[in-house]
Every structure is written in structure tokens, then in C-alpha cells.
Image (cartoon, rainbow, N blue to C red):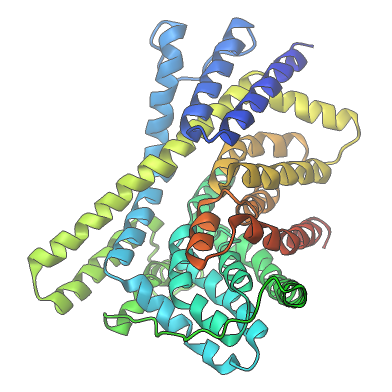
Length: 459
């Protein structure tokens, strides 16, 4: 009976958290305060004691020590890795290697000048590959708006169609450099590369093909409808060249960590004894190679060291925005567990005859909607992700079977949110409404979400 009382209290806290997040309060503060509140209530109700490596001797201080221990454990595990990824992405942007990669990747589109909607759909897989190498949704979106947006509009598609396929490039938050991937892989006890190759790719490839087809059909339909109603007219823009003022060989630098992780992994046996790289080490190796490129180009140690500052600033920015969110979300999940929310959820579902698959589908839909409301795939996934291993065990499923569709659903929801950073940024520059862009995305994303659930659980 007590777990249902605790679960009822936890549910009220969840509603309060959702309200605060919708009001644009800082998610780290909201999740951490809510988590500490639930932990305190669980101790007062005698439901749970804090799990600490070393107690302070008083429950009041123990509530704050758990913040310290959560930070420490995350920095030793996933935190440093995510920070180096963020630092490397910032460095690539600073030396304009990301611009070179986008420029080289978009050249094949010239073949499809007579088929603008096919060209628009082809942007999706190309952009998704770029997103794997430069895992910043807003950063990549802005690069693509600067480079490919004028080309697509010049071919004859509407501004909304052009920017919708650009946003579609960031739908699947995957790859060894993704913060979501890093967190998901940690929760299922695998390394990033293994999780990416064995789980994300097999599901993402057919879904990407589906996205191309659905976006082709929906964009063509809505553009035709808008032109017939007089809402929009074709804009044959002058397509100014997207200028890159660095050697195009720099295009290999953003993908270098991915190549290193593939070459020095268990999938490729080039060396005996085998050599394996972890993600953090691969980032530092790639940084060293990038600095060598810059030294050859600039011929100045001082200039190279100055550009390196962006790497440390990128690490700091990721700590502020991502690592703190992971810590706050973990404390929030500990609070939910301490009040018996998970036990009550599982017990309630099993008593109603819900299978593990049905429980998973419910959570996937909740995460998708949460990402739309929050405007963040990270916030929604990090909030619920830590709960999955215990839920999966209790409903007889493996953690990865629940985590994978949850993680992809959260990043899909971001692309349907008019308050997501990437949607606001690219729509503003493209001169379209963020709400209109989110509406244009909702049909392809809903279809893809349904097909993902069918493929993952029933095929």
C-alpha cells in the first residue's frame, strides 16, 4: 500500500516538474530540486534510505552528499567523454573543418537539379551522416541552412520544405559522439561503438529510408496545396556559393574520431595483439591531428594554441549544459525510485495484464511527447533513461530493447517541438515560422515513430 502512496506523491511531483519546464525554468534546477524533495519525502515516510559510499552522519547532509557522489561518478564515467566530444565539435567549428565537411558532402546534389523534391529528400541521409560526425543539432542545422538551404530553394522547393528536410537531418540522435548515445550505452552496459553498430544502425537505416519517402510525399503535397491557395510562390533564388576558405582536406577531421573508433575496434582486426580505442582517447588523438593540420596551414604555434582555447571552452559549455543535466536527471530518477514510483508502475501494469512491450510503448510515447513539450531530446531522455534498467528487469525485457526506441523517440520529438533550439534557430534564419516547421514535421515523425515501434518490437 505504501508504494502506491509514494507513487501518488511522485506523480504530483512529475506534474509540477512538467509545469515548471513548460514555463521555461532551468531544467537542471527543476530536476535536482524535485529529486532532492522526493528523496527527503521517502526518508520521512520510512520508505527508503540513501545509498551512499560514505555517510556524513546526518540525513540532512546526506541529501547534499548524494549530489557530490553523483557528480563524481558521472565525471569518472560518461561526463568526461561527453565533454571531450563537445570540445572537439567546438574546435571543428572554430577551424571551419565542419564547413569543409558540409561543402564536400553536398556536392552530389547538383545531379538532381531537375528533381527538386528528390534532391530535398536526399539531404536527409547525407545530413544524418554529418550529424553522426558533428553531434550538435543546432550547429549542424545552421551550417546546412547556410549551405544547402539556398540551393534547395533555388531548385524550386518552398522555404518550409527546404528547412524541414534540414531539421530531419537531426531526427536520429545517434553515433559514438552523441551524448544521448553515450548515456544510453552506459545504461545498458556497452561501449558507444558497440551500441551504435549493433543496435542504432540496424534500426536507423530503414527508418531513414522511410523518412526520405514520407518527407518527399508530404512536402510535395503541402507545397502544391500552398501554391494553389496562394500562400506561397516558387522562389528561384540565386544560389550563392557556400564559400570555404580552408583546404577541403579539412573535411576529414570531423569524421576522424569515427574512423579511429571503427578501425581500432573489435570489428576490425588489423593488429595483433589488437588495439582498441575508447571514445575519449579518440577525441584527444583527433585533436592532436587537427592541431597538426592547423600548424601546417597557419605556420604559427601561437595561432594554433589560440584556436585550441575553443576546445576547452567547448568542454566547459558541455559541462554546463549536458553533464549537469545528466546529474540532475539522475538525482530526479533516484527520487522517483525512492518513492516506489517504478515498483508501483510495474506492479500496476502487470496487474492490468500489460506485457513488457506494452509498457515500453507507453514510455516511448511519453518520452516523445515530453521532448515536444520540453523542446529537448536530452532533457526528456536523461530524465527517464536511468529508470529503464530496473523497469526492464521487472517486466522481463533486456534494457537495450527498451532504451533504444526510447532514445530515438526523444530526439524525434525534439524535431516536432516549436520551442526546440534547433527548430527556432533554423526557422528564424530561413524566414519561416517555428510553429509551421513543427507542424510540417509532425506527420513524417508520427509515421516514423509508429513504424519504429512495429519494426523494433514485432518484426
